View 1: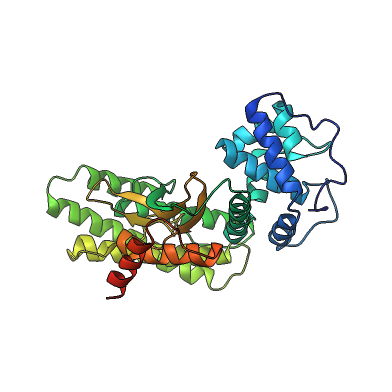
View 2 (view 1 turned 180 degrees about the horizontal axis):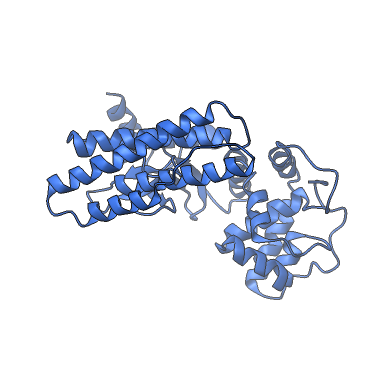
Length: 351
């Protein structure tokens, strides 16, 4: 990351005569009028240090604009890569200068460095701007709950144990590439056999017996890998310890649920070794979802004034008061319509 913003707008920054392109033009003008946003983003992008060699990378301004462009059109990173190369409007909005062809992996790695706290500050700044020009109002505020799902496969204890063994095999291969002498046995065939036994088990006793055999293999592998890794140090060390801890949690919950017959609380479960932050969300006894619960506060015109990513699956009723209090803290006053109802909810919640 070399520069905060381009020194001069490109002469090719021409927006098409179309209502969608003109919307991007308005957004671009608003960003130019609030340059403090670039300072916020720069802090995030420079957390890992900067390089003085190699190709001149994207400016801070281009990173921010590419991120907004992706979210505005709900593109994937691969689609973003294509449109930046193919569309003059997207290319001009992003202000990429003479370097146009950034890969989807580069875009993802760079954009993901922007922290959620920075996005929250940007959203609040834009919300205050919309209230100032009366394009949005707090006369009526709506608070809704929804779920954003994590991109994971349907979790089960057996597949999580298999994922853990696959990760240990991958880490052992990395260790051997670094010249470490290891006495590691790959149990992939045995694990695959136990998975098929669990899927095709006839009766709970047969299924429990297959789980017991699978747990024996995985537990022994975890113990062996942990003992070997103690005497080595490398780039994989931190990742290995993190995965071993998660796999240990999977082993524990499998023993409690399958072998001991316990009802493991959702808060104690891990449903993905890769996305360990994923929570189990069940709303109104409908299909179980895996991800995070979101509480959204929208204004009369539909603009998202505030959003909170919740931990776990709190009840909607207990989150009403904190959400309304956040509106007061951010924008200075409560919604006008329904104030008596809000005060009533405060009293009921406190009592």
